[in-house]
Length: 71
Image 1: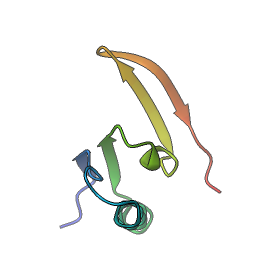
Image 2: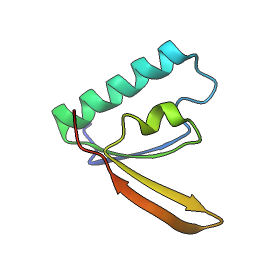
Image 3: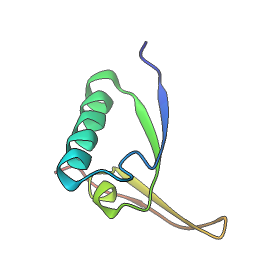
């Protein structure tokens, strides 16, 4: 199955740095190869460095919306 959208709630919670990085690399590969969109909720700043778009929400309100360019 190749879903168009995958929702991931804290996918790197309780993972060590190496495993979290490997997981994010896998998600990015799926994103690029299969054009799958990932909507990820997280408190883990390691994820935001790899995200194309970051929405910050505080108390249920959108605080910021930023896009990062690919390296």
